[in-house]
Image 1 (cartoon, rainbow, N blue to C red):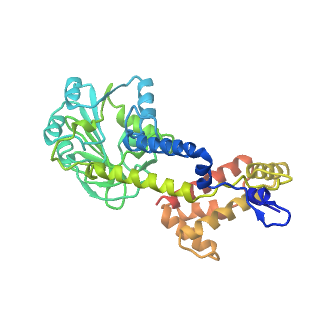
Image 2 (image 1 turned 90 degrees about the horizontal axis):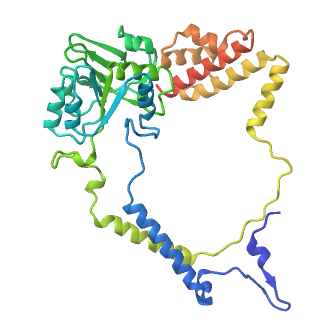
Image 3 (image 1 turned 30 degrees about the horizontal axis):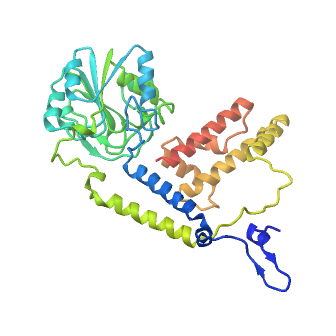
Length: 394
């Protein structure tokens, strides 16, 4: 039976009722230990003050010096190892200083740039790579505009651009772009391509979304190859990361934090401290819960590995493949809007329609023959995982 510490701490005085020895905060204060509670309140107050006034540790998206999931430090290091000199700059003046025929300018944000800055960038001789449908896109990439929205997922290039053809499928989307004359579009969606390259002087490349360049996505599909082919087209890459301090007053780019009145954080802080004080005052200090130890604890990973070894020892590729396919079909059916008793033909048709894959290939993966060897079983697992990932991310 599981009991709590207060139940064990209760003592019974002969001839009288049982009395709990669990102390309350009020009892601690009366007992001369109020200074301990006061010290705790001061520590909590100091911690909350540090949280309110401290700087944010979140990374900046597509920053070549940022090692978080949304940064692009991995791409910058790969380019450096391939002989590409990556120059991270934060001002338009630095871009002009490094500008030249053997350079390429990468712009992923113009939120802190004014109209004059964008005009200056459009006059540089360097080739330009614009990531995202940023403000000022029509100036930096004449003729290329946003024409719609598209989900970000794994897509095939379906174009003749060598940089995209060599990379293959990539995690792209985020928007659709127009394709002006002397241009080529890749990775199309329903409303248009998500990558457009305009051949001129200079060459301008626009990608609707830069998720494939982040540290989180770089190792997936052909993302690394596409990012290297696009960003490493010239010996010098000028990577512009505008600083927040360069925000233009009245430009309309204030963040949500800038719109909050200065007294609001302190009011929230005072309410938090008051809530903690009330919680300590009304709370009751409980001891640790007494639990019974389980005789045996088996990790789920060990169970899966053990079953896999049994399948392999008996060469039961038929049961293993049937289990993988049944589990995949059970997970796909609700995501496709089908009931639990959907027929194989219904699941195949819905999966092919959602993913764009050939229905015959989907049938061979989900209901095909038993793999002939272990390598075929591993390949089958990979194909099933690909189908589920494409259904999850339409």
